[in-house]
Image 1 (spheres, rainbow, N blue to C red):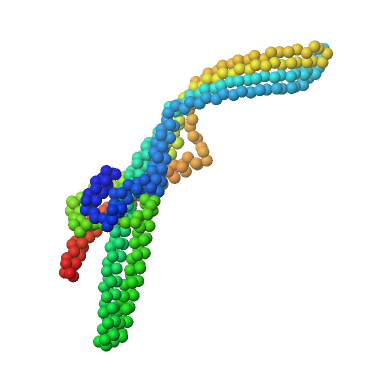
Image 2: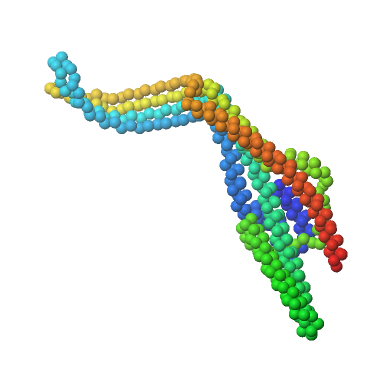
Length: 390
């Protein structure tokens, strides 16, 4: 895409003529916009975020491994009544121990259609993100070209207004001279002055338009542009090729990135709806876990009337478990059914949005083709008009 505009800019540069050596070309301004346009930077960040949707959805299908460890320091004092042969007697105990352990677990979904369709929805969302970024990049080309030619148009309008102002001012001077020698009434002078004041007001308006157009161009590049290169007199104005409007429509339907993004978005919504529908089905998950625990410490026991004793605590345990779990959602308060209905309505909305974008592409392509063909004829007519006026 960038190479395409680069070739276009190079071709235009050959037909450009600059009013100064420091004038900026369309290609230079586009390269600046690529680096500085905030809208494109936001679109690129959004693309990088959305393309991770596929990876996130895929992760739910892959094995899940977890590990945990703990350390526990326990100090316990207790007093109980213990029954002995001689009768009941109070028993005092004081224990202190340190415990350590760890657990490693691995789980894998064996059957879960909801997660599978969520993954497919994630793939479509990533494709939609790529298409949307391409559409945003193409939109930048259009925005740069429009802003650039708006500056050229405003400058030409200002130069034409200045020429008209000079001509009307000369007419005013001639009218004033004729009045001074008594050839015309004062009303002719007032009419000539009113015409001059009108052209002066128009010139001020065109100066403001030029400043506004330059400001709009600086929004794209982040810097001001004092002068831009102008078109030469020999710039070719040719009708669109191929001439068939239907061929352009078919080309747009195959290559328009806004339509591609809408198509991927509708398919992503469809897969999400299927995922919500599969929430009603059973899920099978396999898991394996291994745990090991160690406890070290001592326990002191004292019974009234008897010498105290000490017991060493040295416990070690290992455990492993393999489990296959079947889960079936029986009733969730209607939430699963509501999510399914919501997802399908969201798919209907995305599908209708795709149809709307497709119709807009057809309408805009036909309208732009007609506009270009008409403008080519209008330029030729105005060139002939200039010759006739001269």
